[in-house]
Amino acid sequence: MNFSGPSAIVMGTEATGLSDEWLAAADAQIKIPMAGYIDSLNVSTCTAIMTFEAVRQRGGQI
Image (cartoon, rainbow, N blue to C red):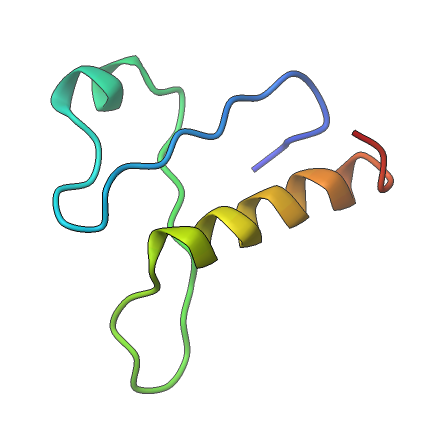
């Protein structure tokens, strides 16, 4: 995903995700690949990963 321009990262709840309205309005849905035996990451971990990647793509500047 290209985060070099203006971006909004919207995270849903761990139990139910995002509402249908949010999903319909989204330009993209992102999945974080996982290796090994875990089947999910909590929403705070996912938010940290996504924010880190957005900052990395912008050269470490917010």
